[in-house]
Length: 156
Image (cartoon, rainbow, N blue to C red):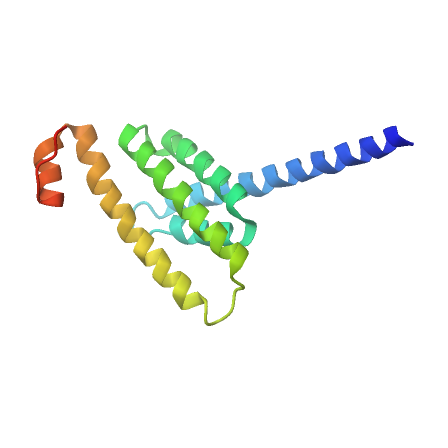
């Protein structure tokens, strides 16, 4: 009797893991396809919107796994760049963590949508600022670039 109960618990866990893998795989395929299809149009970025919705609905854990897988697989489609890899691994994991926590504590109402939009816009500005620090470090423009950004000298 106890052995049968153990098998049921194991089967439920296996189904839950399979379900998570399917959700994440379909979502990552969707984000890569959206980025690939709209890469020729400057200024159009659907990946951030997709990650915000996915993390808000499915939580931090699934969102962070999807962000990591997306960041790594994106390198295969668009070419490997260490600066972009680090930027995407940092930004999208923090972004999905934020929206995953917001999804746990907020219910999606009409009054919450403008707040989430403002948070996403602030995060997008943060992405640009992070890119302005990471990319020059990889290109070898250390001291002068950081002095331009922050207005003071940094010992690097």
